[in-house]
Image (cartoon, rainbow, N blue to C red; front, side, top):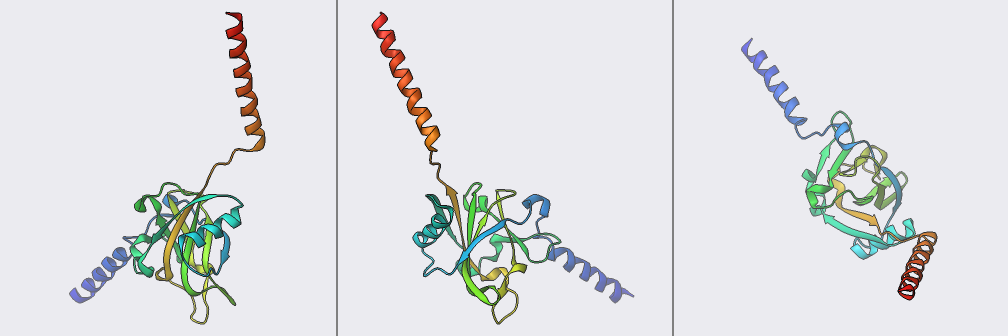
Length: 188
């Protein structure tokens, strides 16, 4: 009887211990939107930034976080009760609320039958976290991937470029202020 109770106790401890690092879905806000993917020649910041800029059609501010070839699995947290969902806390790496993030995987990951290396997500829900669903990917020839296949993450924010209408409105406003100050000087 004692062995049975100890066995159930050990099983309960292991069950709760395995979920200890899981984070609730309500905290991370849901899965972010996969918007682009490609196989890039290299994983340098300049190449990745160019890929994002080409997709978004403008300049971005880009920063890359190395996850030690996927070994730093602790940077990712499983999402509680959702097999295959993982969350990345950007604030833990000094980034604040990125609009987009890029996930670099090892070779052979993709949508069967094609494999890609770089996946761009739009951070749509809780901006502090990047949330990906590994269930949509295949490891070509080897079944499903694990979070250990992610080698690095990069964050991108779109740089603000004024619209032509806003720019012309600002120019007319400054011209009006200049004309008014000139008129004011003449009256004195």
